[in-house]
Image 1 (cartoon, rainbow, N blue to C red):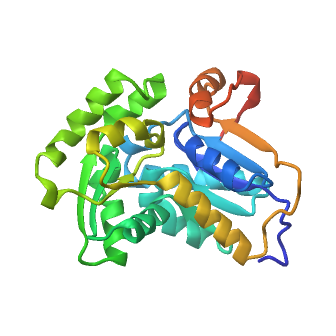
Image 2 (cartoon, helix red, strand yellow):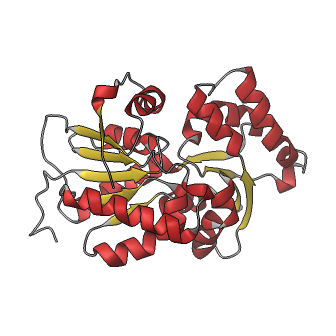
Image 3 (tube, helix red, strand yellow):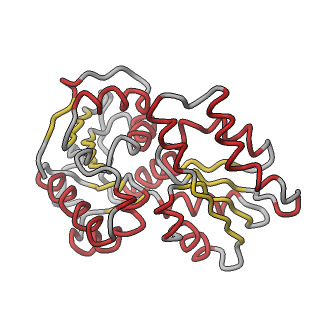
Amino acid sequence: MSARVDPAQPIGLFDSGVGGLTVLRALRRRLPAESMIYLGDTARVPYGTKSPQSVLRYATQATDHLVARGIKLLVVACNTASALSIEPLRERFDPLPVIGVVEPGAAAAVAASRRQRHLVLATESTVTHHAYARAIRALAPDAHVDEVACSLLVSLAEEGWSDGPIADAVAREYLDPVRARGSDAMPDSVVLGCTHFPLLAEPIRRAIGEGPTIVDSATTTAEEVATVLARMGLLRQSEQPGATTLLATDGAERFAKVGARFLGHPLSASDVEVVDL
């Protein structure tokens, strides 16, 4: 593939909304020379309430759009889409490299864990499909995996209440039952299995205690992207930072307002191009 692909081509990412911007932010830190195109399917958010067939259709449409813009690698920056569509996307768009957020997060959790006791914090859909549990057990068959649906944390992140007493109270509500089981049953890795949750890492840390390693799937996905591009000879060699293009399927103003919290810098509606899939 490297003979037919220009390393200057952008990396493409998509998510159902703005949560995947945490992955974009991690990629910008890890690979500042790369150009990137991010597509948030805000007209159809959230994917977590949709059927597997609909999620695959939406994921395919998003990928079609990004491929038409000439991407060299695709990141499925959405846990639900990673759980339900990653293999069909790889088959359909081969030889385009396709990386999801579940597999890198699971691998990092297994590597960080001494006792292979894992706690996955995710949305209801990701927990229902046991995506992280399957990925972790594929690497460590005897691993113990608890999964907790923490959907309210998504709302806190989008409202900008990612720290402070409200965030602390909600995190404790979800995690106090885990701590109540005692030290022998405590996890030694906590996987942030939703792209919104890196914004709430501090309240989660306070609620779970200092012992477990917190695994951020955004950071581990960025590392996987860097590894794959290096292996394929597709890293962009430049001292200048790459360009970032932001696309949404609806609501440029809302995307900019909420997305600024995830990217860590101001955005305006004019920074977001609205597209039709």
